[in-house]
Image 1 (cartoon, rainbow, N blue to C red):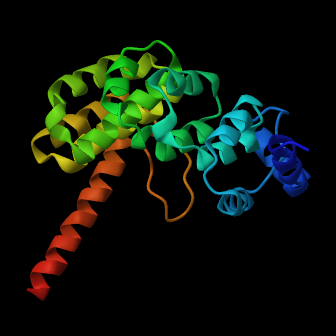
Image 2 (tube, rainbow, N blue to C red):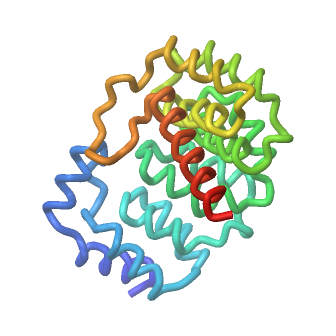
Length: 232
């Protein structure tokens, strides 16, 4: 039995009908086993980094195999073209976000990819591009033109694909949270567009509606600052 077949057999054995149904409810097709995230992480720790196996798992198109592949892959061994191909080939946003977190963010060419994807008409490339941009707002804002980004968000977000809309909204919120000089405009754009205004959230969670998100995070920052001042 090959390593690929053995690994797929292990994944299949970990699957359950309950998780399979849950995944289908959230947009996953039939090419899945229904494996819990915790079990995928445990299996990945057992196998450890295995770039070739990861590529073979990814190419199956199986959702659980792709989650596992992301944890086994070595980002340094991927070319920019290979990453772009992976991004374009996946439509389930949970897998796409794992790919961003564990692979794309760590790739040496992520800034060049960000610039390329920010102009892409492919919704998953656009989602990844805006994810990288949101990260830049938090970590390296000096590479960005924040007013121009706000212009783009105000103009493009209403008609953007839902996949890209989500990460555009994250960029908008991050600008409003981290830059007081642009906060009023970020809040105004959020109110004007109204995207995610009525988004359902669990008790104790913050709404993704940008004005609520921004104001809540700023409130928390101010409370932390006040607490630190009292200690000093």
